[in-house]
Image 1 (spheres, rainbow, N blue to C red):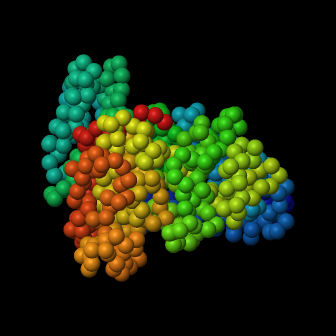
Image 2 (spheres, rainbow, N blue to C red):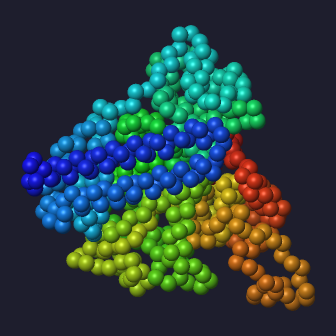
Image 3 (tube, rainbow, N blue to C red):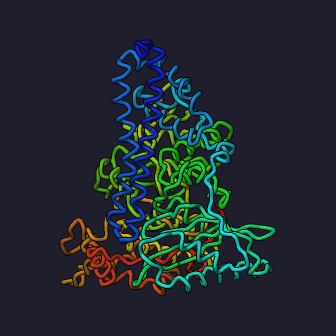
Length: 581
C-alpha cells in the first residue's frame, strides 16, 4: 500500500501541513470579507469581535494540524530526526511560491508545538523566514489603474465608484472635488501643473480599520510619484471622504504600531506588503505584516531582523530608560528600537493585581481599537538570548525578581514569557529634555491621547506621565496596561466636600473609595510637571477634569454611540517632534 512507508508518510504529513495553512488562509479571508458589511451597517461591535476571531484562528489552525499529524504519524513519527526530514520535504516544495515564507512560519508553529522547542532549532524549523523582495515582486498584487485622459475628475470618480459600497456617497461630486483639490495643492508645492497627473494606481481592495475605509494607492506624474490614501467614513446621509493623505508621515502612522489591524481581502500577503512598502520604504516589514492582521508572520519577521542585528552589534542589553516599573522589568538594546518586558514575580505596593490579570490586559489591547494611542505588543514564549549580551545589572534583576519567567541554561538566558514593543521616549523624560515648543506640544498631545482613548472606550487607569511615551512622529502613546479598563466600567465621581479642615491634609481619603471609582478633578496630581506646562494643559483640556465630560462620553458608549476621533491627517496642530532618539 503506497502510504505505508515512512517516506510516503512524510509526504502525506507535508501535504497535510500545507493544506492546513491554505485552510487557515481561506478562513482568514472569510472573516476579513465581513468587514465590508460591518462598515456599511456600522456594526462596530461585530467588527471588534472579528478582530478576536482572526487572532484566535491561527492558534486554532495550528492545534488542529497538530492533532491530525499526531494521528497520521504516531509517536514514532514525532521524533526530532523524523521532523528534520519533514522540514526538508516541506521546504523544497514551498520555496518561491506565493506566501511561501508564511507557510514556513506555519510549519514552525507546528514544529515548536510538537517538539516543545526552546529557543530555535535550525534542524527542525526554518530560521531564515524573511520577506524576500524577489519573491514579492513575482507575486505582486495587480493594481487597478486609473489613467488620466484629460479629466482628473473622471478618473477620481471612477476610483471612488469602484468601492461598490451598498451605502451611497452622500455627495460624490463634492468628494471628488476635495481629492482633486488636495492633488492640486500637492502639485503646486512642487511647481507642477495640477492637471499633469498621468494615472493613479490603487490596490484592488478596500482597507477597513476601526470605523473607516481606506483606499491605498499612488499618483504618478511624468517625473515622480506620490502616495495617495483616501479615508472614507460615515455621515448622516451616507459615506463621505474624510481626509486625504499624501504625507509619508501621516500614512506611516496609519500603518503603524499604535493602530488596530486592517481588514483587507488581498492575496498574496507578501504582494500587499510589497506595494505598501513602496509607499513607506522606511517602515519595518514586520510592522506591515502585523497591521495587516498577519500577527504571526510579523513576529517571525521581527525576530529574524532583531536576531541578525544582535549577532553583529557590540552593545549589551541594559535597563530601559525611565522610572522603574512595579509590574514589569523592562530592558532594551540601545542600538535597536525595541523594549523587552517581563512580568515580575511579585508586584510592588500599591499594585493590587495578578500575573493573570496583567496578561489579560495585554490580550485586551491586542483585540481592542487602539485609537492610534496604544502600543501593539508581541508575545514570545520559550525564547533565548546569549547571556553574554546582557549587562550584569539586568541579569541580577531578572534572576531575583522574575525567576518564574527566566533561567540560565548553557550560556543562554531563557525567557518563558516575553513582551516586545517599539521603544518610545518616556514622556516624563521627554518633557525635561525637549525645547519649550516641543514640550508644550507634547503636553497638549497627552491630553489628546486621553481623549482618543476615551472615544475608544479606554481609560488608562494610571495617568502618570511616566506611563506614556513619545514616538518619532511626536505622538504621545500610552504603554502601561496593568490598570487599563473600559470607560464604561468606571464610576466617575466628584470628590466629596471635606467634613473638617484637617480632612484635606490626611494621607488617605476621608471617604470610602470603591475599586472602580475615578475622580477626574484629581487628574492634575498625575501631571507631575512644572506649573507653566500645567497651564498649557489646562488651556486645552480643562474639561477632562470634569465629571460631566466622562459621564457624557460614558453614556454615548453605553448606547454604542461613542464619538469618533478626527481622521488621521486632518489636524492642523503642530506635532511634538522629538529632537533626539
